[in-house]
Length: 545
Image 1 (cartoon, rainbow, N blue to C red):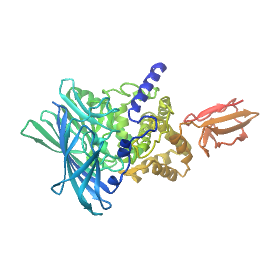
Image 2 (tube, one colour):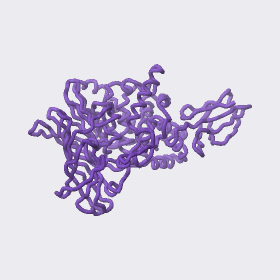
Image 3 (cartoon, rainbow, N blue to C red):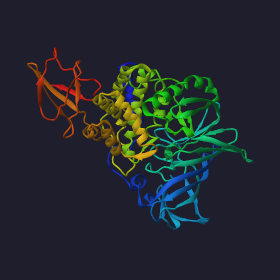
Image 4 (cartoon, rainbow, N blue to C red):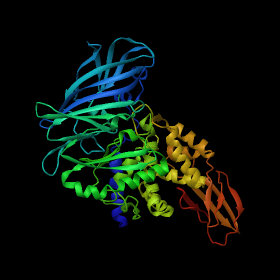
């Protein structure tokens, strides 16, 4: 790829990523707090199950339905916060056959329950709603409900809602810190169309009004924003994988015109799954299976039903994000979005401010897949190539409790941080062991960045805190400042957090130094005119006279 063209494309990519994050200025609104804070009306109850029933009407772009929310009571209280985005409206909320009162505050509904809920018990409410939901402008980055047509002018409908949340199409507890342990998804649409969703298909019912209802059951915990309908003229083909957890069902749902292309392109899915089970451990959702579903947008990590819209070409819509050529050897959407099954879906952060755990590890999985196919040097070349996308505009970790992502650098700056830590570990067996164990330790859990940082330091037996602080919480790239005189090497770190002392590999002899902010001097007996610094470390190097 020519450099000028590549740089223009990277700029486009950064603009696209920016749709996933909030404005850079730290000016927060009441709505930000309603969305991002674990309020008193949220913290007392734990979601157990969503039983969702929704009818999609493509003729007028409206939906209607209800959600039966089962929950566990953690402490006694009688008010509940649910979320539903305008212009959708709640018609009624029912508990024990009684209508409940509520007060609306923007997208939040504060519902007064029939009585104070008793701790250590369970209950449920039913929320009925309807309306014309927000239409997606540029999915998946600027999302909502997607009302589109396929090439034969048939309705093709889906949802992409990461960031804005699933409140764009159904009422729920819309915060990443809590997710249902299971879900039933019942989608009704014109009977000539097929509906695909998360989990396993349990039934299809033909109704007497020209519609059909598909019931999909999810038996594992699932992120709210990953619950999704795909409605269109789909055809299906399937396969199985003899994987770490036994036999994994593989299902592929595509538009009929693309069936032969999909049969060829989707063979990559089995290779990808073998690679990631090797690096990350067992696929986290064997009971729900693995699906690729053709979508009317580029792609999204919808759990057990990954959205695919990469036009059946390798790379990112036929482009290599690394600029090295390696990214054209495999399909970006199959690899990246499926990587989220481990990081994002299995391990989920409680606050979106920590979304680097999702995106950084998953961007790093692109490197590992390249390595799996073509060797360690190829994987390293790929991740180093992605540094062109790093902006260092804002810290990767953003402010908490206001539903705000940090910089788009949560993708490739974070993946280069992980690649750097791998160099410091200098033991690939230990590194792989950490990646596999982290998915066991936090299996189907919601976590914080702090938990992941402390876990990695403990498992690897390294104090990594200053490294995390440097790369995640500042926009500075640590810089090795050095001088060579009379076979003596003088060096220190600058542009770094206080106490930064990351070890660094130098020269072809596999020598190591441990710079600090203070000058150090050592004998420099390597028969070279200059210092060679390990290219796999994401740092800057500055030579002084």
